[in-house]
Amino acid sequence: MSFVPPPDRPSTGRYVVLALCVAAVVAATIAVGRLESGGPAAAERAPAATLLALDVQGKVRLYGSHIPGIQSGAMAAVGDPTEPDEAHRRLPTLAIRLAALDLLSDDAESAQRLLEEAEGDEGLALLVQGLAAEPGSAKVAQAAEESSRLKPLWARRAFRLHLLDKAGDSEAVSREEGFIASEAVESLIGLIVVAAVVMVVLSLGLLFWIIGAPALVIWRLSRIEPPRPPDVPTDETQEESLPQEEPSTAPSPLTAGEVLVAFFATQVFAGMGYRALGIGSEFTPYALLAIYVVATLAAWAVARWRMGPRVLAKAGFRRCPLWKLYVTPVVAALALPPVYILLALIVSEVVGETPQSTNPALSIMAGQEDWLGRLAMFLTVVVAAPLAEEGMFRGVLYSSLRSRIGAIGAIAITSVLFGLVHLDPLVAPMLILVGMATAILRELTDSLWPPAILHAIVNGGVTLMMFLLMG
Image: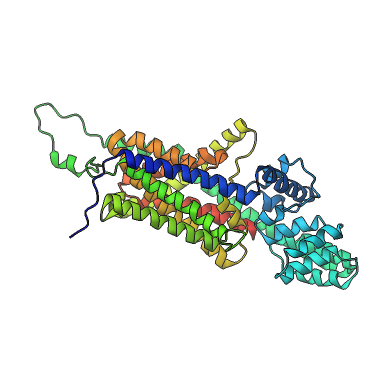
């Protein structure tokens, strides 16, 4: 006896189940936030105080501007910057934690307290002991040697110079200052290269809006056929060849909601399980990738149950001409940056601060200094996220809405939802813009592959920029 999926008819019981799932997701999100921050008061007090101390010392101005929340947290801090509390444990990299410890270099008692965290990490223990030791002692010399392996460059500059000076090695201090000067030149060259690439992309984008967009409109208008006389029969074959979403085959909004809830609820509960089982105090790139894959499989399972076989094709992962597959995403990616920057400027003027993402994935990405961790983040952000999110928002949800309210309404609703579910208020307008671009590509190409490629280009550009700036 073959399995036949149940009819897609809403019922009171299913609405109740869906409401309970949404409530569970909200409750779990709040619980995870309190678990990670130690309560609202600690979240406001400890990280902001430590970040203010780091900003005052000038050690994370460039690096910190690309780590979510550091600048805004530092500016909003009102606590005592000499009180680290447990904020350093939530900072994403060893180097930034050490910058927080450097603040305590003249407070031996406070630095000694932090040796407990350094247990099992000889390098960190040596640095803590060196910061707390008397000037000229053997511990200081050992810590100075250990600091030569620190990454990124700003951390090595900060700690090595401090410890060499504390050890009284003036010759090594002079040599390190020479290295710092040459590294500064290399960093400047790297920034110039990044700025040049950005300017080229922006220039191509502006050219598209000045020349390409009007030309595209004129071309499309020239292809519109004049109205047929009433006595001339309509070419039904041409009408049937146009891509259409039939209400009988498109999933219902409730089914689309179930797929979205399965995806996000699985992420929340998997994250809670990861923390509750004590697997790690922080989310690693490998954990993030595993959670994302599990959540995607859960969403696929729900879609498969509700929509039947060949669910990927029904969602929109269909073949399309090569020029649509490759050309349209690249053109859209070039057209996005000018509008993106314009929106960022508008948000900055309205809100009074530069939009900065608070996405935790960016914090994890910023803390990766080994190539395996960066590869895992790349797979999560550039491969898994575009495929999963496009399959749900521009796939199941878009198909459901388009068959009921039309293309314009479906583009608007899916774009706004895409921006809001990231829970990133300041950058939500830019995320909505990306959602609109991918939804328009979905409508124009009748396939999810072009919007998925555009999504991957956008995420890949951000990822590459962060890795280049981190060194």
